[in-house]
Picture 1 (cartoon, helix red, strand yellow):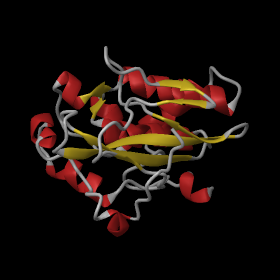
Picture 2 (cartoon, helix red, strand yellow):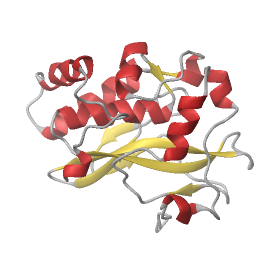
Picture 3 (tube, helix red, strand yellow):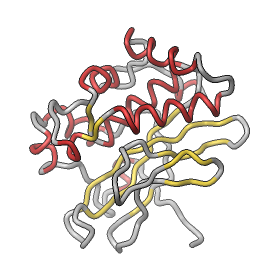
Picture 4 (cartoon, rainbow, N blue to C red):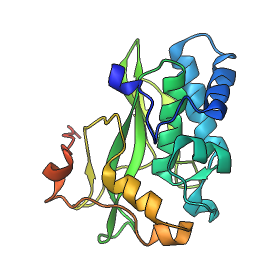
Length: 205
C-alpha cells in the first residue's frame, strides 16, 4: 500500500495547510472509515466544482485546490487523496469516460477516488460535488458515484492509480480559466486505452 500513501507534486499532502486540515478532520473521529467519510464529505461540500460555480483559477495540486476552494472533479480527487493519505489511509485515483452532453460525442474523462477501508477493501467514492441531478454518497459497501455509464462510448475503468493520468494533469495545467478547461477536457478514446494502461471494468448488470 506504500504507493497509495506517498506524497508527490500533485498529491502534496505534506503541505502545511493540507496536513493541518487532515488532522483537524481526523480529530473528530475514531476509525479510518469515519475519518475517510468525513474527508470525503468535506471535499464534496466545501470545494466548489469549477464548472458548476464558474470559478477560477483552474487548480491541479491538492494544496492549490484547498487554497482556492475550487477545482474540477480531477483536482477535487487530488485533494481528497491528499487528506486521506495524510491520515494514513491508502487512497487512489479512478476514472470513467462520459459523454459531456449525455448524447454521444464529445466524451471526456471523469475523475474520482478509491479509498482502502480495513473492513471492506477498496471502495470508490466521488467528491465532485452534488447538485439536483447528482447524489454521490459514502455508504460502504454500497457504491454511490455521481455518474453511471449509459451510452456506448462511455466506460468505467477498474484501475486504481497512485498518481493522476498525465493527460489529466496536462489539461489542468495548460488551462487558464474554467471555461478554457471546459473546452479542453481530457479524454482517452476507447482505442487508445492500452497507451494509458486503462482497463475496462466489467459489470454484471
